[in-house]
Image (tube, rainbow, N blue to C red; front, side, top):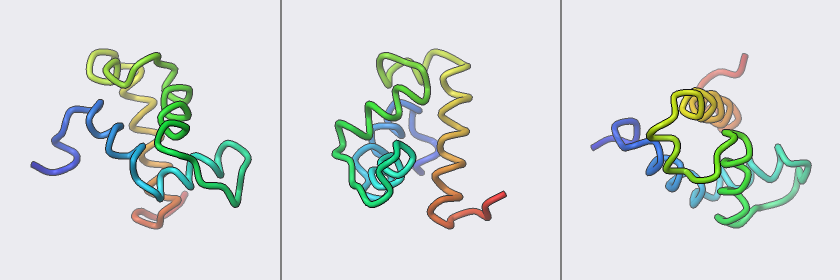
Length: 84
């Protein structure tokens, strides 16, 4: 199963454990040379998506929409897709 086929909550969990995403979250939080832990990255993701639990990504459409925006911005930050 590919990453995009996984439940959104599982995708979020994988992202929060990714070192690149941890750097991205730190930079976006005002720490340009920082590296967040998985816990801090998860807090950033929950704050961005306006949720209390990553499980809500599987049940709330607006949270999924915000998560999709965050993933797109992360993919652009990493160079996986062209930045706008």
